[in-house]
Length: 354
Ligand code: SAM
Ligand code: SF4
Ligand code: SF4
Image 1 (cartoon, rainbow, N blue to C red):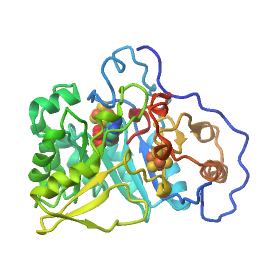
Image 2: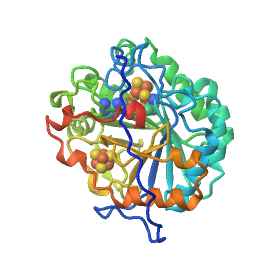
Image 3: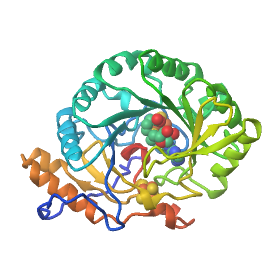
Image 4: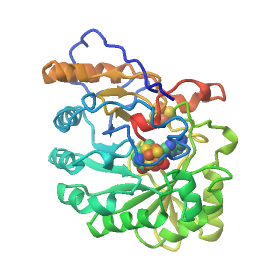
């Protein structure tokens, strides 16, 4: 494919002044969580995210001068913190392919009151975990879709072995990051038979496996409903071997539903974005690598901020713009998903981050 798969953003007239009241969107939801994609590039080609036949050598990724630099990202992060954002997750693409990411982590870790974390495929963690931890990163989420090497190599489509990801997880733990969350996207007929082994591997370690329903993000992964494994099925399968009980959410709007092992060996999480939509409490906003805001993982269009940053706009002008975008938000895609909406042209997950 030679075409760039991302939306044409619309520049808007200057937003009205933000009046300082807590930000609430059209459906009464506050803004709490910001996901920052630092790159749309990745060294994997996971079949459910960046199918190789689309993201091939002709694919036009965002160019280096279009990507926000670390100082621009940190400036926005400070403004978001002032607007009530409590948590920032760095993501991508693969965030660790962005050179010197630890420099950005240091800038963000210096912002008071922010919970900072990062989602990674783990491949570059063995090399970078210490520098990231020293820069102030306290937590990390690592994606790992199977412990079976052949399955994992086929899913990441980069022939990358399980053992190296586990090395990454161990490097993060040795660097003091805790707890480490391990994301497994479950796809029927691909890795659903490996769910119990995954739970068993991390039971009693202090790390938390989170099983994610396969989603119709983007428009390139050929998603089908019959490939989704409902979280209820996963909880039942694990619970049959190791009894589980529901645990309370850590905070309103937490994405993962928590389940605790009754014998005290820790917990797992399930993310049921398809079978049990959680749009009514969704407090997440996404910032793309080139500086556009997306109010939903399934958005079809972004709201650009980069032109403001690069034309020397004052902080209050940018704050007004962010506030206007959030106040106008009425997304609830997962509540209205159908086979037809799944076919719509949506932004790619590798572009806005998970
Ligand atoms: N490259 C990093 C990684 O894989 O962890 C960060 C970006 S990735 C887009 C973020 C998360 O989204 C990963 O845990 C990945 O497994 C998940 N993901 C990607 N495509 C998905 C899909 N179609 N359905 C559900 N989760 C998906
Ligand atoms: Fe890359 Fe993460 Fe997407 Fe896999 S899920 S292709 S590692 S961005
Ligand atoms: Fe939030 Fe959109 Fe996901 Fe609903 S579908 S939970 S609004 S990101």
